[in-house]
Amino acid sequence: MRQTAQYADKISDHPHPSWFDAVLFRGKVTLLQLRRSVQDGLSHETDRYPRANELVDRSIIAESITPIWTAAEPSEQYLLAGKAHNLRIILRRLNGIEVPPNGTFSFWKQLGRVTRRRGFVAGREVREGCIIPNIGGGLCQLSNALYDAALSAGFEIVERHAHSRVIPGSLAEVDRDATVFWNYVDLRFRSPEGFRIEAFLTGDSLIVRFRGTPRLRLHQIGRAVRAVGPSKAFSDAAELHSCVTCNTQDCFRHVPPTSRETSFGRAAFLVDDYWPEFDRYLDSIKRESDLLCLPLDGRQYGKSNYAWGTDSFRQVNQHRLFTLYRSHRSRRLAHQGAARQRALLANYERLAHLYSKYLTYEVTHVTLMQQLLPYLWREGHLGGRTFDVLMTSLPMQTLQDRLDAAAALHPESMTLADFRADRQLVQAETEALQQARRIVTPHTEIARLFPDKAMLIDWEIPKLKRNPSESLNSPAFLFPAATVGRKGAYELREALQGLNMSLAITGPMLEAADFWRGVNVRLGRFSDWMGNTAAVVLPAFIEHQPRRLLEAVAHGVPVIASTACGLENVSGVISVQPGDVDSLRAALMRLLPAS
Image 1 (cartoon, rainbow, N blue to C red):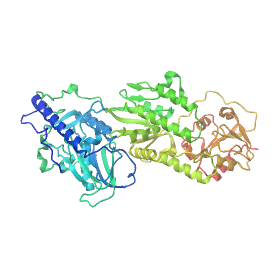
Image 2 (cartoon, rainbow, N blue to C red):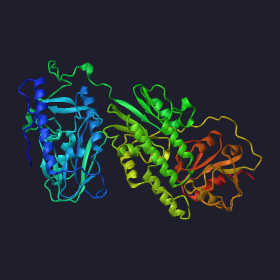
Image 3 (spheres, one colour):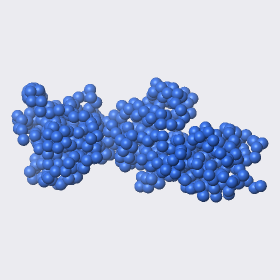
Image 4 (tube, rainbow, N blue to C red):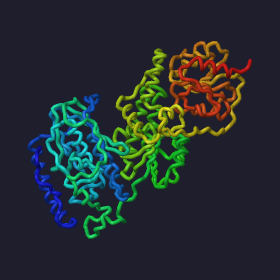
């Protein structure tokens, strides 16, 4: 193990730090940093490694889990929030990198210098026997975890430095810590085999994980380190003082109570297309200090698809140019198909990126719509925070499994197998949903998938604006969707065979031009059929926004819907299982008009 020069943060003999100590410290640091820069420039020992996926399926060979929120003093919580924010930034350069065989990992080479310009804020740092607020403070928790995992994996430790003082409850108490200070106090290790580093934040923990080929080693894999008792070897830990709680007012680092950060603890609400159910929910939980991000203030501009309530929010962020761009692009796309789905995902990613800049360190809780979730999770913006998901659809993995099952039933379908999302995106959503604090949805099927965390809210039954128009034709069943396999078109076609009943359809026929052969089909608008409809029928495999069915309920029209429509708690809805032709036919026969 390489030894560097004596630490520049050696504890002063003064009872508390002075300006002279700080100047002397800065001078020593500068010299040591220059020396390390020259050494690294001559040796070319380390490199910066890119993200890759070659080892993503390898075994986990080591893991370290440490808590983020450790300070007992409420006045220090803002520094822990700053630490979590600093970790979120730094992990974007670390999570998913793969180090080749015999490659040397260097903390600073990989992660770069900590500066305000990169977005780092004040966090907790141990210096000269004190816990002080400092830009980038808290990153030693990451270096500690990397060292702990490297030991567990049996890697060769090239360079490591222990802390001069110990924060109780940290890895330093069990001598598995590694302090870092740009750039001369580094952490470096290597392995004869290639390995992958996965590092991310949950709501309350930092998780560092190595994947690779298991090797003979002395330490147990997957060792989670939590708060442990004080160690005799570090009995001076009790001497640590914090600038936030210390009352030594003649110390130049003293932080007056009036200047301490107290604004952290805000909530952010990130929304997209308008859902009246979620708007009602947000109105019940928002606080004046919270912020709202939305594409456009729909009430201000008369756009009902973005008509979110914006009152009482301290900060409202709109994205008018993005909304205009998305609207223009959407009009040029087909209503169905893989190209449209890819465009939708690309737009969700852009919107998530726009919103992420408002997730400053003082935002400790986020409520967001599901379509933004995988992108914000993948880039680490939700780590170190609690978050609730406004669930608008089935999880992507469940949705694609459902489509696969339907495609197996109807291999002739032109639409059931036309698109599947990227594997990494599906995995990101799955991980994020596991970490979510709460799932909020009016959809009963979605709520059943999360029995321990789902909050089921009521559907919004629309108010009648006018009476439905009357028709002179005989009553018909109404299919309020495009003719596609996922809406249960195949099952409805089969169930209608032999029934002396016509079918009104309101959308395009995308499966085939002669799809409804054997069925008396009529075309028209949804509103034109409401006055003369025996029932509205939607036996879908997938249906996330059953707005037409809710409108039928408001008109008092019977509804036959699959459980995939999520309306089992709505009065007036007859539920059937997706793909069950027999139960669908029985429900249709119950509602046939008397001859």
